[in-house]
Amino acid sequence: MIKLLIADDEQIVLDSLKFIIENNCHDVDVIGFAKSGREAIEKADALRPDVIFMDIRMPGIDGIEAIKRIKEIHNDIEFVIITAYDYFNYAKEAIKLDVVDYLLKPMNKNKVIDTVLKVKKIVESKRENMIRELEMKEKMITILPHLESEMIYSLASATFRQENIDFYGSIFDINLNIGYALVVLFEKDDNESHLDNLAGNVKMHETFMYLKEFIKNLRPCLAGILLDRIIVFVPVESDEDLFTIKNTSIDFAEKILKETHGKESSVRIGIGRPYETSYFSKSYNEADFAAKMGIDSITHFDDIKLSDKEELILSNDDEELINNIVSNNIDTALIKVNSIFQKLLLHYNDDMDLLKSKVFSLSIEIIARINSYCDVTSVFEENLIIEILRTNEFESLKKIFSRFVSNIILKLHKNRERYYTGLIAKAIEFVNENYDKDIKLYDVAKMLNISYHYFSKTFKEETKCNFVDYITQVRINKAKEFLSKDSMSIKEVCFKVGYSDPNYFSRIFRKETGMTPTEYKNKNSKGGVAFGY
Image 1 (cartoon, one colour):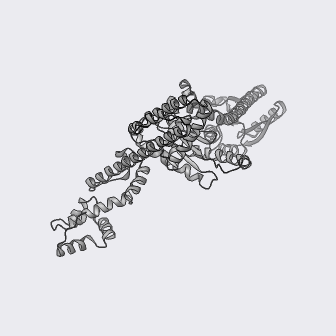
Image 2 (cartoon, helix red, strand yellow):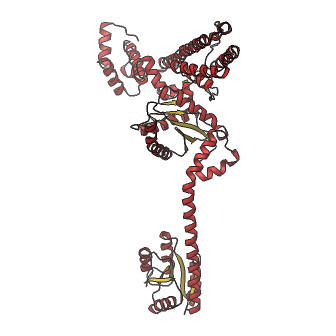
Image 3 (cartoon, helix red, strand yellow):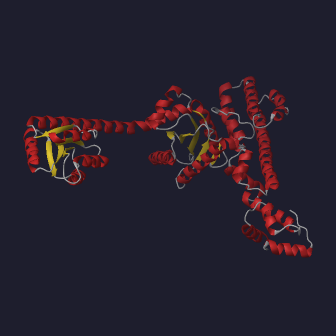
């Protein structure tokens, strides 16, 4: 049914049109009349017609102005103008408003019928198009999650075809040129029974789906669920600073982790570095490695590296052992050693020479991989070759290899301590030399090329003091030293130790020492005590 509103200030025109339409045009309902432009605007808003027949010459607001105002609010309404021949030139302005047709007074019955059928066809066509669009949108809403999951899988598995990047970018309305991977890993509870796991499958699926949507609402990204994890592609701009990307990614991860609090399964989040889309699988491998091997609930791949930024791709048992070694997890590493040796025994049976050859090859592989973190060649050279060659017992060979793995982990641990102690030493040296400047934790972390979250945590672990408090201690100790010199005023000391507001400096000084700078200076000058730091 097509709804029609007729606007004309002549009653005879209203009655004539109503009679012609009702008796000759099926499925067209005349739902109202208006005798002025203002009334036409009000009726259009109240009745929401599909079509309006509008006389262009009416008292007050004329038909042209009424059409303009109605279209501003209801752009889907179609218009047919009614005009006398004398005003036909004036009606040309209405043509610019994209009206369907016009009717000249006095009106011809056949012309009215033809015009009604014409506009009816237009309205019905628009309705059909709208229905098709809605159906298409519904299909897309159904298909998009599957398409998104398939794309995430193809990106992570390095099977994505680069030539499709513009197509997928337009579908998801997202920049797919460069991005990093974020992996939300749900850790399994090994103590749960099989029945408990089955009972929890539905609930876990709901958790996954909820968290996936939560992640996508935080920022533009793609997310897919794969087994025990959610894999996220987070797009970045090509000119975006890597340090900023790293810290922004950790902020993003913290919001996700906060949302998982209270859930039954514990969550670990790993973050990879940004790459072009064709190399996204590298970022995924890094994020997966960081999620599994990181010490904290959130770990960026860069924060578990000890030196050069070498690529680390892991898959089989041997590589999982290397992961355990890198993460300094002796217990897990030795369990993995036991698992490897059980498989070796089954595979090679009693062929001790092949067993020793495999262990020897694995040892070389471990040395090659771990040397990217620190030089552990000496561990391999400590009679390992001779011990492997001399032994002819399976258990003895396993003990030799286990000791070799333990020694590497110990050396890595010591190297890590030296590495991060060295970073904190650099930070302390920087503060001691630049205490008079505006020092921010973010800037120091950037200088050291580690995330500010990780730097803050490591600094406190090493110094037993947070970074801001340490800067304050250095500045106040320096202030004591300068205040002991009669030649410097309180204001000069304030600026010299990095504060721009003397009043704020005085408050901090009193909080730290129990005295105002003036009291301290007076006491020091009387007692003649020299203070250092």
